[in-house]
Length: 380
Ligand code: CAA
Image (cartoon, rainbow, N blue to C red):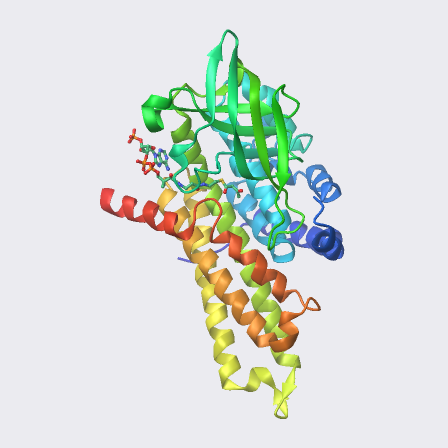
């Protein structure tokens, strides 16, 4: 099997690479320091069609394939993992649920706006008491005439505050376990909806991670996604796809870390020669590059399955598990290659190190990925 991209996919890679270098790289320092959401960058991405890459033209998207979308996250994350995750969450778990589970009316109303970048999407499942155990959410949705009344709160919501629509899960039948969960499209500005505290994070500066609160929040019945009680399956199916995006983000961070370490190791001289010429360092670089190559194969294999409409849950979890762990290890080693300089903000490797860690946590921790993979193995 050879991994070969089409001409169109290579064009996407080049376009995103150039955009990231020209428009994002100069703003990294500011994002790191202010932690402000990169509104202007996201607007430019909307204009370039990057917010709707795998969405069909019928719904206002760019009509490109899923692999092109993964290439975009991969390339963006080499420069900014923050911008990578904003795109991944917006598309995979912020837009796709409407496209795949929405009514024609919901699709017409929301998808073109999301695909064009007029709207930004978010996804709200996690709660203070329901992280890995996603089915234990306590937010409730009670039907009252032509509205559902939502009460509860969600935490760690990526894109919150900047987003226009939120895919929200709530219990419509608290006695029915996972079968009592339903999913709703909640628009910002809906009465009773508000965005709470913004987290101060170790990494991913510029990416919003906030609490969102529902206080007698009145959501029209036509914003129920799928049927009542189908919410958990919708969420899980979307996370299957979302996890390929996070794996691509991890791959991008790892690639950037290897590139930085290689460049530095060739230039930095100690004991009269470049440190890359010391076998201890050269072997380290070899291990780092091998981990990146293995991640790349897993990420693009999962993407190819998804693109062909084949089941990809196991492969998505494998890609996320491996690529996020590889990114953490590779970024750690990159800091080591840079030595004392690597521990300073003079070089980007300390940022890669901080950004890599979250890939092992969000959209399901590495432990959860192992649960998903082993369930598949035992079931298959
Ligand atoms: N697709 C469709 N249906 C699925 C599914 C999938 N991938 N996975 C499970 N289901 C269905 C099952 O078939 C089952 O239905 P039936 O009873 O009809 O067969 C039902 O859902 C319950 O399945 P489980 O018994 O396996 O559920 P569980 O409670 O044991 O949980 C879990 C499984 C994998 C641990 C799940 O809770 C999970 O993925 N947890 C992690 C949560 C997570 O990833 N959160 C991410 C937050 S979003 C985020 O991080 C975004 C961001 O900011 C970047």
